[in-house]
Image 1 (spheres, helix red, strand yellow):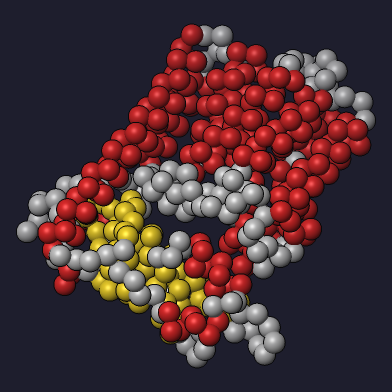
Image 2 (cartoon, rainbow, N blue to C red; image 1 turned 180 degrees about the vertical axis):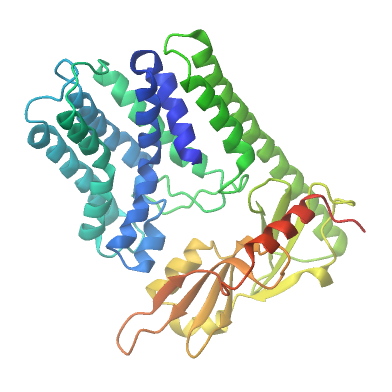
Length: 408
């Protein structure tokens, strides 16, 4: 939803006066294009699925090279007096789909990330990417129109470039990690300032965008409301950066006051808000997981005995450290992984950057199961929390109580 709203706003600012609400719709579609990599899981193994999300389609490479192709396809939809250009399917759509397919496949082959099944999942993701132009073409064939947005190729190009480009930029503020330098580097950029889902960012933005969509394309207030939405959401991002700075400064002070030695630590916002933060402290083979809230009184880390300790399980991983599942999972977690024995020969690997479920300090939110497939086969990976048996209402209730602070 957040990327849809951002894309719609960018589309409106680029082409709203010329296209009206179509600019918002095309912007929303373009803004979600990077996340269509989620369809890779239909044709790829779970390890590749994990590694490919926020990979090639979230890179500068893809934004720069895919935008001209998508703009060419979109402009041709309205080329002849509002109707699609002659032979649209075979002259524009099919070549455009082929180029998008090759861009995804080439980026995947060049990527330093270990990806398997490239040809298959590239076809699926490329197909999802060009589905909307095909849908528009089909609709206009079934219900012919004599009008359509007559905008320049440059405008279409700018719309796609900015909508696709702002998507990974916003993702960089989250904890998940975005590989903007693919296919040249698998660095996961994660500034850790905002939760993947934060209503305080999305809802005011969405409300202002909906109000603007009800106004005529040439009214002054239409553009003002969209601009206000971008400004308010951007100010909130700045606010989250300030919160991260406050939290990190206080964590460093608290660790020093308690005499806790550490190699590094990461602070990340918890679910749905920016008040309560997870803190994961790396002490080598041991990780300490705790939290701190902006409304805590006093605003300090809890004592060490109240922190939850996890082992990185170096001894457990050593015999299988070469396995692709292990390499991808530990790379994904940026080294903040806790490992414990599972049922039989399986292992649980939790990414502690995402913290623990509120109200139960023993259950990491984001975890994987590593399991042997059989003799001579590589280890497999399944995504999911260690224990799915939890009450969402209880979790949200505990989070709500925690937001208002932890007293002495």
